Amino acid sequence: MQTVAVLSLKGGVGKTTVVLGLASAALRRGARTLVVDLDPQCNATATLDPAETEATLADVLETPRPSVIRDAIAPSAWGDDVDVLVGSEEVETLNDPDPGARRLEKLGRALAELKTMLAEDELPYQLVLLDCPPSLGRLTRSALVAAQGALLVTEPTMYAVSGAQRAFEAVSDTRDQHNPNLMAIGVVVNKVRSHSYEHQFRIAELRETFGSLVMPVALPDRLAVQQAQGACLPIHQWHTPGAREVSLAFNLLLARVLRSGRRGRHQAIDWPDDDDAEAAEA
Ligand SMILES: Nc1ncnc2c1ncn2[C@@H]1O[C@H](COP(=O)(O)OP(=O)(O)OP(=O)(O)O)[C@@H](O)[C@H]1O
Ligand SMILES: [Mg+2]
Image 1 (cartoon, rainbow, N blue to C red):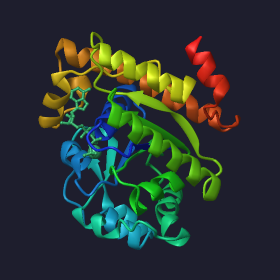
Image 2 (cartoon, protein in one colour):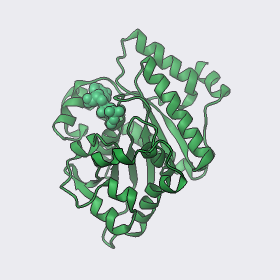
Image 3 (cartoon, protein in one colour):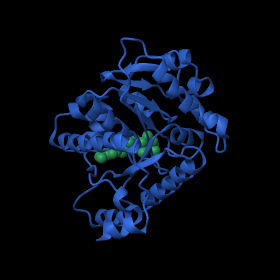
Image 4 (tube, rainbow, N blue to C red):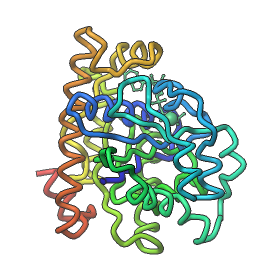
């Protein structure tokens, strides 16, 4: 089970879109996936459209017991291979800016329980995607404490790049203080318009800052993303040229994410440093 936190400290850059796109690619590939909706806005839950549950993430964060976890997970409307640990507006009240180590560990404990509580006929999750809110409180920090990998999302705009930098510092701090196994998987650049000089300038700036961590596959800005989300469908089931382009990008992104999990078990973390930045410039 590979657990990946998808984050940025800027709102609206595409965290939920990346989570949904990866879940859609995983569904197509037959990789059983759990989406954990940590955002009080509950956008991922809305598009995955699970049946009503007796509990939500708010209950799991208070009491990470197997019975509560089971009650908070439901199959998505997308298919049997994608489940949701459903979000709730109530988690907003739990988003303490300085929650202390015990509380930060509750999500990780719940996800560890998941491995042990599967019924005999249930397949384990290959991928767990944590959709973070755009703030750095208990919710995002809990995701970083629970995850093995962090995937940063940004747009190629000035404010979004600075949000990615702050998110990267949060990853680095969490690794030092709570989770030495946390690996930065990479920075995904979303909503890219290939003919925009401004976007190309910001992508070059990202490469200077993050070096080889900037994912070689960027996600294009396509209306199909919004259309598929509005129809509560996986992007792979939205049959327009734009959707096919975005789906292909998500297939490549998923392959890299899954590969990073296999590599992560054997290799040290690849943090950007001056050498990386120089290599990216060369
Ligand atoms: N590649 C894309 N092409 C077109 N529209 C996109 C793309 N990515 C995201 N969007 C749209 O941008 C909006 C914001 O995306 P999304 O909700 O995924 O961002 P977010 O980072 O999760 O936001 P929040 O910080 O509020 O959680 C949505 O309406 C989404 O459909
Ligand atoms: Mg979101």
